[in-house]
Image (cartoon, rainbow, N blue to C red; front, side, top):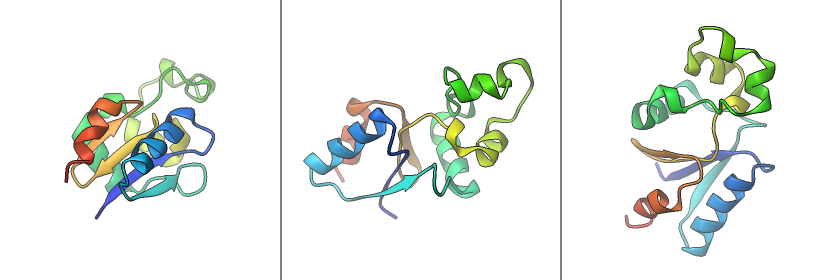
Length: 112
């Protein structure tokens, strides 16, 4: 499958993830959540790797504007409706995934 980075061009942490892998010569596919979003299968794989509760950026203005702190919601359903709720970057390779700025964890993707 290969390494995937999910994020947006405006996200500073996503750009740091891209730079991290470029500097190490690791090829990856970038998926811009603002343009394409994330497929249900990819989201399920990420949720299994990191846990459903870690998926949504609860500190974002988008989360607050949607009022999600005050209602019961399914994180996966909300992200499929609005991919920009996903915490970024998401670095994924098969069943392994890391969410957020985490260079230490990204190193595990450079050793295969």
